[in-house]
Length: 150
Image (cartoon, rainbow, N blue to C red):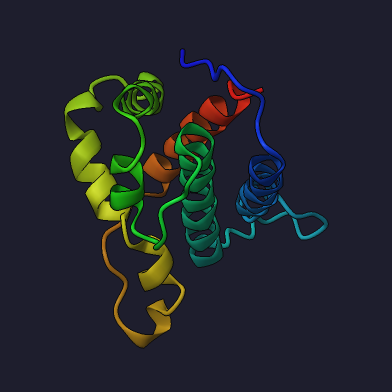
């Protein structure tokens, strides 16, 4: 596990709090909603919120590691901007709960790289392939990496 040597800066702490609320919102999109008794599965908002939470999480990790956060929404580019050791830890944590998925991490990351940009306007086109389960596992791995910053 990667351990940061310095305490997070105030900017990192603010960004981490922003990440936390978007992750919470993404998770709430999948909650059971009584009294109807039906799961009101909010697929598109869930995807968009998970993608944005992961984006912000990657930026927080980069900001903490190097003092600067990359710009943009491309999850693959943001992931590749992280230090190699942190990339390896996130990859290991993402695939740990889904045995056999290790060889597919890069493919899965590429599949979800533009979810934030594409899926918030999905009504303008036909839905495309994506993987909510991978995004949820990736978000948990980012959550673990951010928790290690304390």
